[in-house]
Length: 255
Image 1 (cartoon, rainbow, N blue to C red):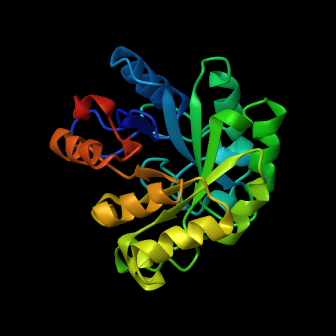
Image 2: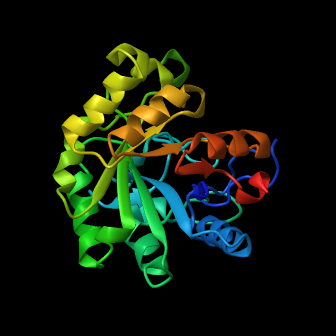
């Protein structure tokens, strides 16, 4: 089967050297889906979810609001209404989870939703199920002790053990860095942990996506989705290894 392409935070990088300006916005998702459609690829987007001060779920990767949003503090310090007045890049707004689901629910889109903090899985599931999108959604998260030194940010991470709250109606995946996989004892231990939690997929970073991991996951009936792939040669390599899908900042990079 051809390796699928998932639009990572929407089409958020016009060129290799660009920052991810305007990512995780309705406009970025629309551009990513248009790119996939032009390539004749199944439409699939990935985005991140956090909770606001008033407990509303918004689509935002970073916990801090400095930089692209042009504001100080954290997502949790603002109400949803206040956040939506900020500039997420190119004059775009930070969308609510419900806005993204509603915008694309009738467009045969697969939703890959990453939980960026603990305590939001039940509300994500409720929003998904209320729109009949359970079969088109896969929820993912890093474990809270994935302490890879490269990713030490002041963020509140979610936990793998919360993912099972998605039940059987919504599939979920374990995200992991190579550091986390090694700390568990290697590829087979990572796959065993995914089976233990009831995951349908493992989502390792690309540097950790070895043939041994891919084969072990497939032998266990799990899909393998790699993040983040932005080069044609690397994409072809993973395709040959049998990877099921890759996340990409711009699908056109992989043509």
